[in-house]
Length: 114
Image 1 (cartoon, rainbow, N blue to C red):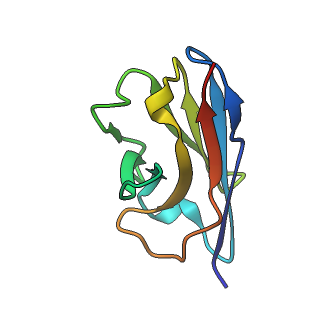
Image 2: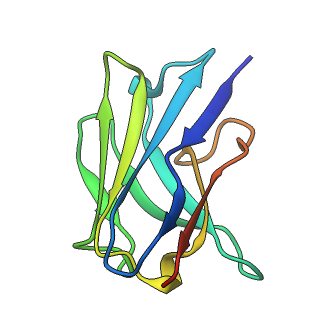
């Protein structure tokens, strides 16, 4: 059974940083393009970053230059380093394939507020 587990969220002040982790069981994250998605209250879920099998990355314009997606193949884990966080980054963050292939995990809440 495929399970994706996100962690690392929290409450942070504007300008702060967080690193999110996505761990998987029942599947290898290394054989597919993986992405980080987020869903803010009242909004649709959106893809904010993706990393291909070969390591190339793409970002939504809203996070470009502030967020960095990476993967640790040995740990079967994907990360999202988020810097210069802004209140509009407040959302529940999820990982999944691009395109999605597994059920959604519980996500991790990121709240940016002073």
